[in-house]
Length: 315
Image (cartoon, rainbow, N blue to C red):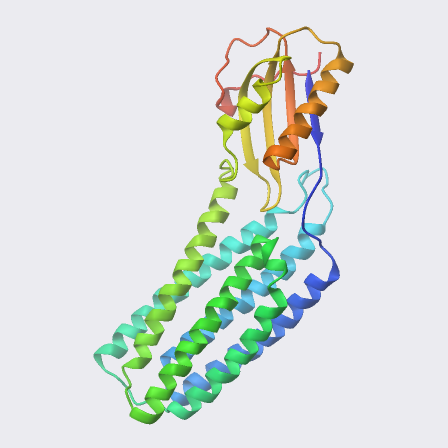
């Protein structure tokens, strides 16, 4: 007997403020990117160009977050029974990969500049970086709230935050170049900023890959969940357990539950409701599928390879 239920309780809103803020942040970042590319070429500053590249990363991140925000709201259908939530995860993954690739290229450029420093116009560098910082801070303020509930917006927000720090570093570098003509500061700033951005990008990469690999969410301890279910006196044993994340906000859980007594369907349903309520209350698991059994399963291991699993369908 298969008994599945989906308790929907998601903490993030998909209202219009999120979409509107994303569009505004996108516009700001597109402006900074173009300004810094022109400024970088005019001043001959690679640090300013790296700042521009980070801003390009932000611009892509925000655009992807906006598209994913719309796609994620699309209803499930026969071909996409889970809906389009994973679009957000795929786009966060793509963006992290793009950023890492660009940063590697910039590191190579910075090393070249170490070997042969070139003169830089510090004044242009300073004013362009300052404009970038102000626009960055505005975009950070716009996305701060939504970044707490959404991995994709969090990814865009982290890019922006990284850029705020990088803009400050570029401004500091530009002052030294403007007044003291210390040109090697330019590649130094590029590398410092790059290391920070890489660290953030790898964190997003790890999180998205974990979700795509259907890893057990880090917040869930399978042993504790099994103990919780088995603490019910009607339950004899729990096995064939799977826990995974559909998106950054949805945790799914399924298992086979061997029960002590041969319950009627209505009593089994009451037990299922109680177990679901416990799992949601104690572990925040919002989608639960329980398959009840009464002395019918030979294989009782908690974790079971799904490829070899024989599902018992409705009798």
